[in-house]
Length: 260
Ligand SMILES: Nc1nc2c(c(=O)[nH]1)N[C@H]1C(S)=C(S)[C@@H](COP(=O)(O)O)O[C@H]1N2
Ligand SMILES: [Mo]
Image (cartoon, rainbow, N blue to C red):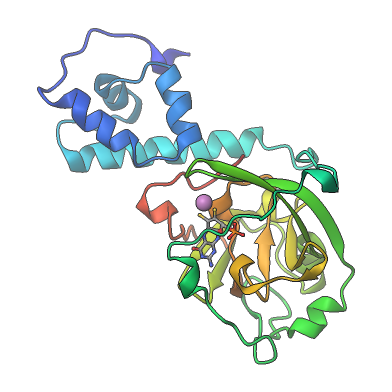
């Protein structure tokens, strides 16, 4: 591929170090893919048309690579291809907890007061109660959750297929993004193709019981086609939009598409 053609390049003195440091900031899979192609600082500037002689322009160059990578992943994403599922005997015990804070700070959401707020390109933006979600048809899955921090685990989630919910509320299914805001200040957004994927669930249960607080009570989005950080817990608000809105980790350099 022409973009990755090898050239004679002159690195700034600390170029190698700066590149290494910058590479730490993008999520593992994309980092691996680019390292396999022998990316250099010179390659980075060829690829992005940015000068790569200071930290800021390296950040910018990496962000544009990451957005390029988003588009590649979106093109490769097969909306009908299912993520692997596993037998109950393979469920990881205990399933790990993770968040941007420790387990002792897990948010305790009151499920009776909780309302799921809807906004943006949705016809019926009435808020939803937990009981209303429980009354929708449910589905369950035993799938693998992969965290970029270097662990993966098999878990068992149940809940409402998100595609059915989006159709039910009259979401604009031709919009680009679905965004999520959480009770703990976490937020993320996903592509519409993944939102409509048959294994994308509004999870209300873990292993057959009400979703416990540490796994995202009262509702989390479960997407086995995406990395862990794309699976928001304690979801409070959902919006449909054509405007890119990033995410908690994505805004700090994790790849936005985040496919697994
Ligand atoms: N609201 C919220 N959702 C979140 C996070 C978070 O900090 N807050 N962390 C993400 C990350 S990085 C991971 S790996 C998974 C962990 O989910 P678990 O606790 O069910 O293992 O939640 C994701 N969703
Ligand atoms: Mo994660």
